[in-house]
Length: 490
Image (cartoon, rainbow, N blue to C red; front, side, top):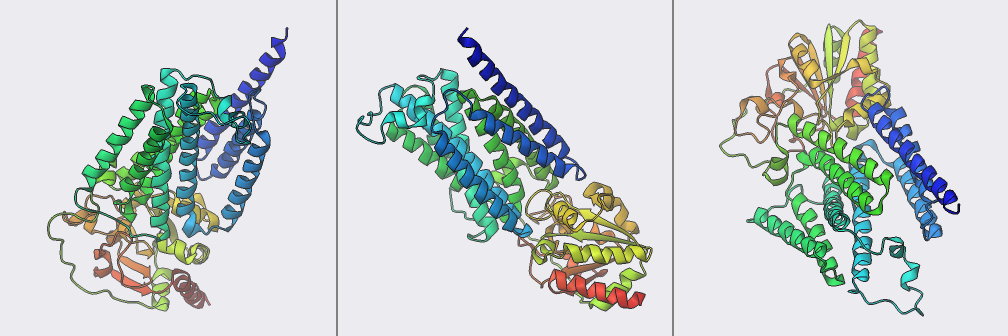
């Protein structure tokens, strides 16, 4: 009956993994609604905590002390950065943390491949007298041999994880402003395809049993380089799609490595993340009227043909006049963009909206799917300010209402309200669904200056006859509107 305690122990761990998987799925389901999203995050967090704690009780677990130290360091760093990061830097943090997940999956794959190569006798053993003897490493906890399926999944997981890691780092650098938005050269697509083909060939050789340390190093170097080269030519306007895609890559890599390790929690969590990331990527690409292939291998900003000439001039307005215009309006739609996040003006905007509502004005907030620098960026900002969910409308729901809207107030949004997306076939954003702000009777745009948006495209809305420009920092400009509106009420 010596097997009974082990059986019960394994059963308890599997049960914990099953409960953790349920919490992951239920948490993700709750995240689909703004009303329950916060609770969903907490549920998923409890699931991850349960999965981590259960893993410590695996009978073949090694180096528990080092693992505890790593967990404490990681949790402390994540807690500190999560508390301090500004909302404007949230996309960068998501890209960075997503890259860490891909890097972790690639590291697991590296350990698996090194263990496999050692089992083939293709790595020299470290002398027993060395403090770095083989017994000191967790690689010995792996099965002595990998089946062809396990080895294939391990190589695929390592490849995808490495691409996600290096690609996410480039996305982070682009969003942080540390490098140019795009880096292109002649024949770049061919070079990228050669890098991918070389990485696949190296991985195929590993699967065929040619594992050696030099080949493993070449394989990872090619995978990391491909991730860099694939992301460098992608423009900043496409970063929401890229972040979602790499999120899917990370989930897929984790799931593959979970199959190799026989860890159900990794398999299910990875599959959920991969599926969610894939669906989100498709939704983001659809919202921009672009295919995923076009985002990855296209040339955003290099549309052919001569762009339409924009006639007219930008017409300024002061805050007092803009406030009066909205004070006596029947319907006002507020369109937030990345400029709102930069100015941290969400609380002032909600204060202004409340003043309008008290006057009997019907106020709504219009959200474009790719407004900001990541999916849901504007929703999070408005939720942080306490804007009720029933006042927030998606693009498809609000667009028919612009024709009966007296004033549309645009704060820091640019490309998602640009009419050229509908009228100029030569425009790089042609065909992208936009918020039909130009259909409103009057449009007021709060903008720092006369520059173009993140995609570097001039906006015809700013020159329209029914548009007035309120120049200045978003928070200061809205504060001016608040003061002027109070004077009207006073």
